[in-house]
Length: 446
Image 1 (cartoon, rainbow, N blue to C red):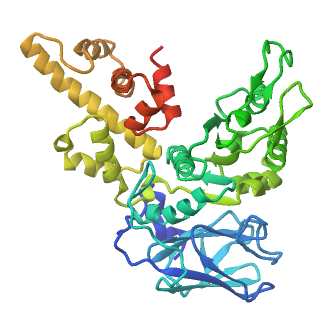
Image 2 (cartoon, rainbow, N blue to C red; image 1 turned 30 degrees about the horizontal axis):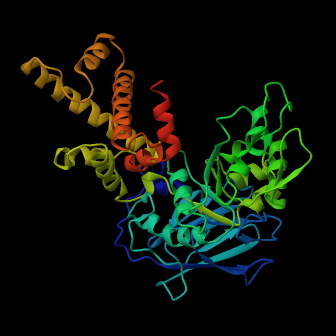
């Protein structure tokens, strides 16, 4: 039961779950300690500790602020010690990262917790039958657990925090929440905290008046004003500097902003959806993120699982991207898909999509080059001279592939824009990627 017994988790591949496994409902009950009798259902990731951010908050002084996490996965529960001071014990065995099935006693500090399992009961967390939520695709049990919550969050006019590793699709989910909300007809505005210099973020969010600073030659509306009546998506909010966190909190709480260089408040009606790759609970503990802003954002909270935990979704997504990018379904071999399924995908869905694009580009280019050489004519798609030029550079394989993929992406963007009359929003939707990412690929052409 110890961390040593779960080497499968340390390989990066994780356990492969069968989506047909009968899911269980779990309940955690405090059976010993100062909080004896406390009982919470296990629906999604459950944090246990003294911190106010923990769903199961204990007053036991020997328990760390964020002591452990419990996460249901089909018929089992993953327990992870979060670097606690006094350790986590299951049936008297010290654990760091392990799997439980229910019936075990968890000992932390002077408290004991019992994990109880049972069949799903009426009122327990539902599991969707659908294999997607808006543009977010995935039929794994891990994803289908999220869709009912996503549907409820979409309809609720509350702030939402979307968490997950880089490349898991946080922006895609955020846009799906907007499109499924009563604000769907309103603006969808995106701000990336890592893409703007810190000195310009206040002006970008709240706007500025003429003469507010050097270069401010005209008044400018900020993103809050542009998102009035709709949704403002703030990506990588965990990277926002502390002084700006205070100003953002004030804007959210008062529903008003002040442009840089002005004392006049401007009332705004904006829904905030934020995303982060960071562990904000830990950032709050370390004093790098304001706890008041954190609690204001986590009124709604949803975490996207990494691709390595989404059993069956790698093949589904690979085939989806393959056909979406113009590949013939019959040309995608099962052996290639099998190799992809055996990879841990540290870059998650974004890395998978780029891999599919690269495979299409390189494979099609090689076949096209051979046909062109035989027919003494230029092949369709990326010109064969691109391949020859890259090969002549004698670059390392990863860099050479990247150059060819960039050429493929440029031609793809040009083609899809032509097909949709230059309309970026429609072209991005047809490409199956977020508008901001489409704009990024488009900007690389210049």
